[in-house]
Image (cartoon, rainbow, N blue to C red; front, side, top):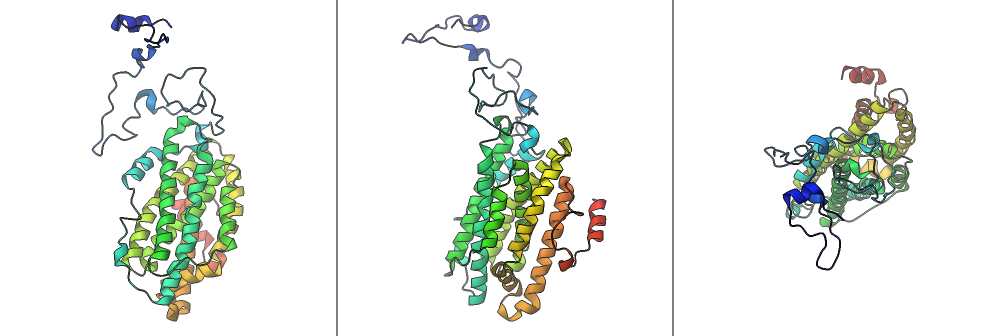
Length: 370
């Protein structure tokens, strides 16, 4: 292979073959001339993905030319093998906040082994310990779906959308850690893992079997993780000790990132193609029913009521009213998220709003003001 003239001019003594007689290619010494010499400037917190999104390196194509794992911005040879990606439109996976969320995720990683004060666990009354173990059993089951779902789709995403894939990698790690921390809590205080019910598995199967990634994102981030986020926000009321409060605070910050990505991805997809909204609605029609069934599962609702009441003595007087208030908050937040994502569910939702005393007209007025 002949050495390019521009390389020979700068490096005139380069050999054309190796000592073993192998033909050499020095074309890389010419550099990527359109970007060579551009120096990204680190921000106060270091060199972020936003800082290096300079020139063409920051241009994420709507429809990439290649379906290869080559780094975006590299000089890609035409004979590079096709990886067979099926998510090849930016609208398939992108969110406007994804780079910022990735940087936040890597900066706020925590350890379920070291960052929870396990040595401070207190012996609890039997009813409270059983309730916490039941909640943790269900949560350790639910959390792993949010690892499995991104893993199912990531290898199908075009590598040009690298920032989205990197963020989803952090979500997989987050959710593995959540499943870990709730399993540890169930076992750490002399309790154990309790009941797993069909309702939980029905919801998880609904999410994992979504036909498209955008439908899957709506089911996972708008619906499933959104409900869990609101549950974690009630951690101060649910947690019997500082150990559980710490768990809920840390898991909550992770879930907030995941929900933020999902909400903005749906928004991005719907803004680009309003017809996508209907396929999202179809998924949520089905998913809401599965979510309601999980919320009505006798063990899940009664365990939450027990924790909110602080014990069995006041579960009917205090626990169930607070548990219903939590359900109201979850459904109201979910409908508001859908509004922000551009898929209004106010006229279509299958959630039992009347049963919980949610005034749809007031909710409509509130979301219209945002």
